[in-house]
Amino acid sequence: MIIKNRLLLHNALAGWLFILPGLAALTLFVFIPAGYVVFLSLLRWNLIDVNAQFVGLGNYSHLFASQSFQQALSNTLILGVGQIVILLPLGLLLAVLLDMGLRGTRIYRTVMFGPYVLPLVASGLVWTLLYNPGFGLINQVLGWAHISGPDWLGSSGFALLAVLIMTVWQYLGYYMLIFLGGLQNVSAVLKEAAAIDGANDRQTFWHVTLPALSPSLFFALIICTIQAFQTFDQVYVMTGGGPDGATTTLVYYIFDEGFQMYNIGTASAASMVLLVLLALLTWLQVRLGRRWVVEE
Amino acid sequence: MAAKRRLARIAAHAILIVVSLGVLTPVYWMAVSAISPMSAIFSSTLHLFPTVFHWDNFVRAWRSQPFGLYFFNSLFTNLAIVFIQLITSCLAAYAFVFIPFPGRHAFFFIILMAMMVPMQATFIPIYLMLSQVHFINTYQGLIVPFVGSAFGIFLLRQGFMSIPKEVIAAARIDGASEFHILRSIVLPNAKPALITLALLNFVWHYNSLFWPLIATNSTNVRVLPVALSYFLSQEGGNNLQWNLMMAADLFTIIPVVLIFIFGQRFIVRGIASSAVKG
Image 1 (cartoon, one colour):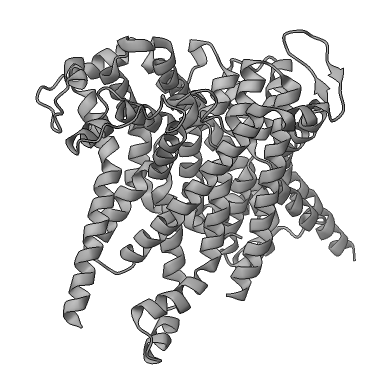
Image 2: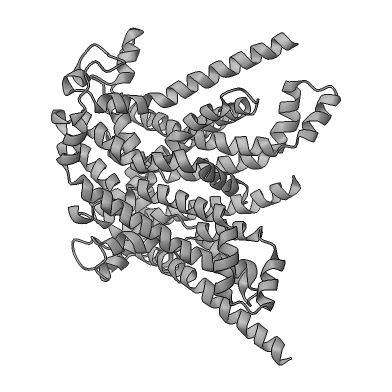
C-alpha cells in the first residue's frame, strides 16, 4: 500500500514536473495572449495616445462594415480558393506520376519540393524581379509570343493573381509530398484486387485509389486553407498589400492596423476573426481526420 | 499494351520535366541575376545565359549591409529556439508517453488546444507583453515566444511511442531515474524524430518574417528575412541594385539549402507524419 502510494506520488510529481516547462511556455505565449487579444478587441486604443476606451463589440461592427476589411477577407478567400483549385489537382497529378516508379523520380521530387524550404522573403524578391514589367523574365518571354504582359504587381487586376502564382510555386512540392505519402499508403493488395476484377488503370484510380486517398485530400484541403489565411511574407515583400489594397490579406490587414497605424483594438478584433476561423479549421481537421483515418 | 505503357511513361516524363523546369526557373534566374551587371538586367534583349560574370557582386552585396552580423543574429536566435524547444518538448513528450501521471489526458487536451491558436493572431498581445518587460529589440524578444511548441510535443510523442514500454519498465526496476531513462534510453532511440523536429523548426524560424519584423527595428538584432525585406523598401525606385539583391538572396538561402540537401529525408518524414497525425 505504501509502495503503491509512493509510486503514485512519484508519477504525479515527475509527470507534472516534466510537462511544466512546455506547458508554462504555451500558457505564457499562447493561452494568455489568446485571452488578452479577446480583451484588447473590446477596446478602442491607439498606442499613440495613451488612453484606452472600452467599446464592447464596437470594433467588430466597425470591422465588418469596413470596406478595407471586407476586401482583405475576400482577397484571402480568393487566394485560398485559387490555391486549392490549383495546388490540390496539380499536386495529386505529380504525386501519381512520381508513384509510377519512373527513372529519375528522386530528382524530380527533390527539385519540386525545393522551393518549400526557401524563405518566402527570398522567393518574393526573385518573383518581384521576374514580374518586373520593364525587364522581368516573364514579360520578356511573353514578348517572344508577341503578348505584351501586364504590370503584374502594379495593377490591381493582376497583383493578386501574381501573388497566387508565386505562392503556388512555393508550396506545390509540399502538396505533392502529402499525396505521395498517401498514395504509398494505399495498399497494393487493394489495387491488385481491382486489377483481378478487371478494372483498368483509370477505373482503379477513380474507384479504389482516390477514395483511399480521402484522408490525404481532406488534410491537404484544410492545410491549404490555413496556409492561405496566414499569407503575409510574400505580400509584404512583393506588393505591400497594394495596389490600393488589392493584395491585402487578413494577416497583412492585422499587421497594417496594428503595427503601422497602432489601432490595437481594430487589429485585435481582426486577429480574433483569424483565430476563430483557423481554430475551427484545425478542430475540423483533428475530428474528421481521425475518423477517416480510423475508417480506412 | 506494352506500347501504350511506354507512351504513358514518356508522357509522364514530359510533364515532370516541364514542371521541374518551371520550378527551377526562378532559382536559376536568381543565380544569373546575382552575377550579372545591372546593364545586363536592364538590357532589352534577353540573355538566358550570363555573358559576363561579376563574381564581385557577392562581395559588394555582403558589404552593402552588415550581413555578417545578420547571419550571426539569425543563426544564434534560431539555434536557441531549436535547442530550448527540443528540451521543453522532450520533457513533455516523455511524460505523456512513459509516465502515467494523474491529469495527463486533460493536460494533453490542453496542448491540443494550443495547436488551434494561430501565432499571427496573438502577436499583438505578445508584443504588448514583451514591451512591458523591455524585450522588444532584444535577442530574448526574438526567442522566448517560441520556446514551447505544441507541434513539437506532438511530433516527439509520436516518435517516443515506438519505443517499447518494456525497456523503460526494465530500467525502472533497475532503479534508473526518469531523467536517466530519458537521456540514455529514450533520446538515443528517438534520434530521427529529434532531428526532424530540429530541422523543421530551424527552417521555419530562419525563414519567418512577421515576428522579427515587428519585434525588432534596430540593426544590431536584425535577422536575415527582415534585412532582405528592407533591401526593397529602403532603396526603392529605379536605383534598385537587383543584382546585389539577388546575390544577398543567394547567400541567405545557403543554410536552408544545405539543410534541404543533407536532411531532406527527415523533413519529408516530418511532413508525412504531420499529414497522418490527424
